[in-house]
Length: 238
Image 1 (cartoon, rainbow, N blue to C red):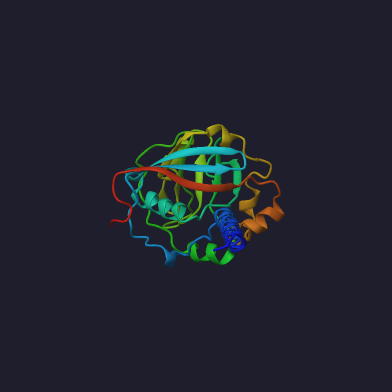
Image 2 (cartoon, rainbow, N blue to C red):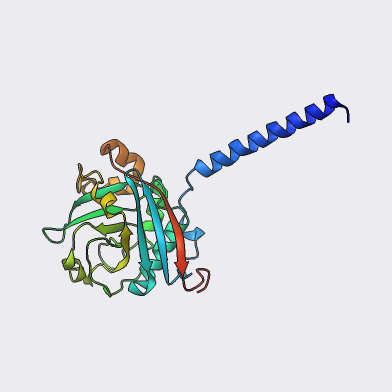
């Protein structure tokens, strides 16, 4: 191969390498599309315990999940989080508790796709007893009546002990699934301007992030959610 041909080949290789790097960067920076229920094996069990890091617009916080606290709740959280469901979602509630006076919570768990939100709305898991009491930093599924724990997650900014025993439509308590072990100050710093208002509009949670951004500007968001360590059962087993 003469020198001119060699330089041409080398140039092609360099260009191809640069294009591949650009494409890879674009793929890495593109949020995953939230899954539909039919795309996941919802019978599979989560690890016995696992660490999850949340990267947000206000910084990072880490939770440790314990499957023995709420087996069905931990499984559902693991499936959703591990498939990008919460990536890019907003903290649509940073406000006082509705079931009793004096508590404060953070809440998230609706996507930017109304059809996906609707599909998950009918996939609530069975109710479970409260095995570990509420305290500041506890994470758990929000719910209404029976079998309504689906995708929406809440965290305690205050001790919220009454949530151990509060009863609504025959269901008692909100079983914790995990606890914040690092970064509670990040949750304290989230935008509280809108309080519970986003939950009080019937369409806001169904329509998702796009509507929330327009109607309630300045809401903080989750940029990514990642399992950093796990212990116990293989997550693929049943």
